[in-house]
Amino acid sequence: MFEVRAALLTDGLFAIVSLIALWCVRRDVGPMLRPPRERRWLAYGVGLSLVTYMLATLLASVWTAMFGQDDTHYYTDAFMAADLPMGLAIALCFVSVAVFPAVSEEIGFRGVIASALRRTLDRREATLVTALLFASIHINPFMFVNLFLMGLVLAFLVARCGSLLPGIALHFCHNAFCVLHELVPGFPG
Image 1 (cartoon, rainbow, N blue to C red):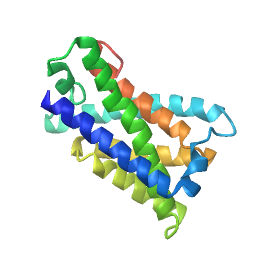
Image 2 (image 1 turned 90 degrees about the horizontal axis):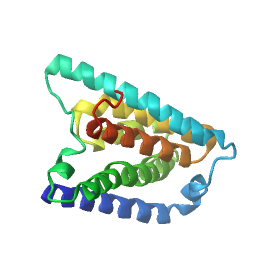
Image 3 (image 1 turned 45 degrees about the vertical axis):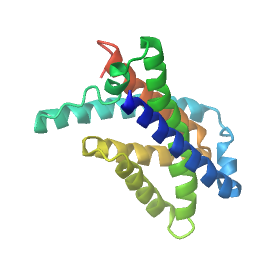
Image 4 (image 1 turned 90 degrees about the vertical axis):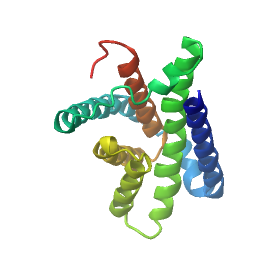
């Protein structure tokens, strides 16, 4: 139960920090919280989540084959081991793994940090630095390459449509697929 509380506390603190930072730079980032002019970008975000999820599972298979390390229940173990009713454990897992990160990390990385970096770096450099920070903050070498590539895809979405919402959709769906992969036997991946 300690791990679940720690995960929810960490997620909550990161969300609060992201929202405070958003408030401080609301003129730069606020417009990016509006839906994209072309609604198809939301569908692209959801569709690209399938690509990032399949890439993540492929890279995980390669990592496991090369190093023998298997993180097949990386997201769900703590929640399933907690002394909670199954439905609540699954709901908290989705909130902690899919909802909080999708919203707070996209606001934080593709919104606040990227906007600040673009003041001193060109768009390409800011994208690379943001993707590296995004991958690094997860402190997991097992997922670094996938997270870096995902950070590049998320930055591409923001650059193309000027909105964080397709990236939030991609991030949420990607993480939700990862949880489903661990919870549902036979889930693709």
